[in-house]
Length: 199
Image 1: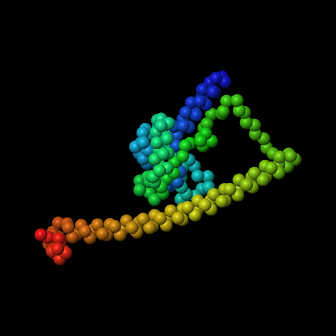
Image 2 (image 1 turned 135 degrees about the vertical axis):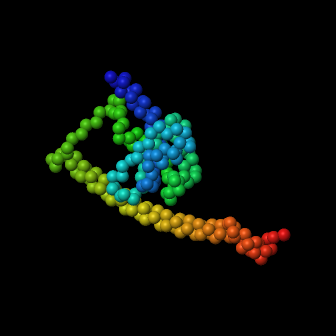
Image 3 (image 1 turned 90 degrees about the vertical axis):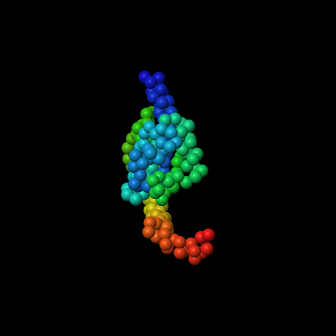
């Protein structure tokens, strides 16, 4: 039995090495989009979108992307670290890190380690410490929520700026297309003569 647990945990550790933690994803990112994006680095075997416990519908998402080999996972981390990588033209450049054991909800128990849980009531000598830890966890949650709201605001500003630039470039393209398009050769010729572009 103990040998089986060790093998199961060793197999799980190999899975962790093949997995990339991807952060700062757009809320619109789906498993299909992530699979298509990361298949260019190798073969994606599984994608798990991680829940956002702060309940911000616009907040960045994160995911665990399992590749076929550890080398493919390392390639993704190296590539994304050295150059911005955006998925489907969305404004957030994502971040990629090596996955950690604690990120997996369905991880097998580590062999030789047994966890024990108990309620801590007011008479317990550790009650004060438990309350401090609870307060600290609540403080960290509120700080994280504030930072995420700020990040969403910044990314919305960036998206609006990109939209304005895109519209301006599209208008320029339409103008050039109307000058050089079908039936408009006379205008293009006049402009070319005016600026000395014709021989």
